[in-house]
Length: 102
Image (cartoon, rainbow, N blue to C red; front, side, top):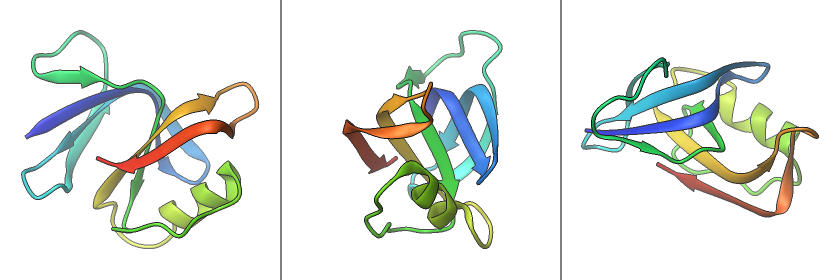
């Protein structure tokens, strides 16, 4: 199992939790998440944003709002996607943003 900590975890299109940890099982699926209240063993701080999604692959999107709607609609959150180089003030992707599945 792998654990990743981030600045902001989106659990739905318009709801996020600050300072969170996401657990990923051996199959690459989300097994749980929690608030980061203290340093925990075997947790990698990756910062940025993590989205929980039911989608194994993403279609390209032009902006953060479109991406957020795409990956959080529908069923149970099975996968976690990380966005690095995110503009938190504008709540938008930047030209340097990288999106990858954890």
